[in-house]
Length: 487
Image (tube, rainbow, N blue to C red):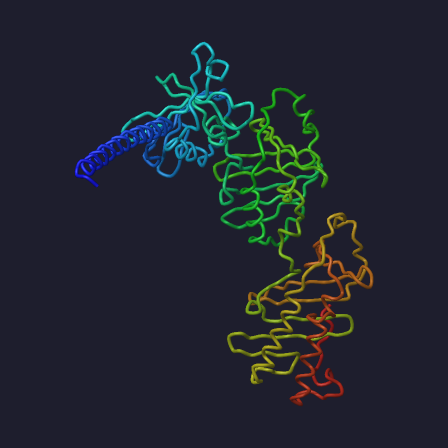
């Protein structure tokens, strides 16, 4: 190849390379411009970017009213409002507003003529403003939701652009009383409650009063032994119950009729240590219903509660009381006289001297297994549980002429005497009297004769003593000097 041709080829290659570089640079510039445009577009969709933890005030204007909400040392508090009713603020909702607005990004921008903004809900939009510690304000206008329920329309002050924002976030920011109001059934905590009363069809199911951290039942059994842990658990459950939604505030009696609250099936009344009374009426319902309507008498607020959350209305008194007939501690009793049908024996205890007698037989020096069995025998009486409560019959409707066939007589360390007597109703059930007063407790026979009953453990006791040859094996009672009938 001649030198001329080689030079021409080199020149052509140089020109081609230059053209390629120029083309590459041009394409790269175009691509960079496009990327910059996309970045600018993405940035333009970022409506806010601020520290949600720095927000100390939220202002809301919606169809329900105007609200100014400020932080306190522990939570959020409404400091200004023109809403007619008092209510407990849902502090979690205010935290959600701050969180959603702090990094709110639009899905899309729309160019809507000013004269058409009212069609998108901006003639009277919901206004939400977050103010931080530097008093910088971040404000969003929330218009209508899209017909497809995929997004909400939103705007910012001094910005003519209409934005589409995520539907869920838009729904929360638009809010309203459904969000602002705490959904808790009771606007108090369980530890604040000093009185709780449940009525069913105008009859008192139970009525409890707490004084100095001690619960007592006022109705229907004033002398009943309250199971404090159970009633505290009940109140914890009730105070954690949340309504599904708030419907309206009662304006006239027709509103009560509409929601079947003119003749309520249940009424729950609680009082707090601040002197507040909360009375809630519940409409009739059954297991086929999904919700039950309720009205808070003090505010007139009607709401709906899931039937699955209304189980506390079916609570029976026995569930909140001790299930024992009479249950003193072993260490508080100096003597227990027992008679079950024809069997009668006594247990005498001197706890300080560690002296324990079964009738006249001294067991103080016996091996630990005998002393453990002795305590277990005591517990078969002190731990007797009742099967049910008889709330239908008053004291006057019982049969005091029927003779008891079972007696448990406790002599306490302070020398007071507590007597429990059982009157048979039939072959299975007994009515329980405590100090000759009808307790309304019903005991089953198996509480005495079952595997953990006093008759069974007395037999275990005498069998163990017979093995130690402390009593004759053939007749366990013969050497125990049986006490006279405890009656």
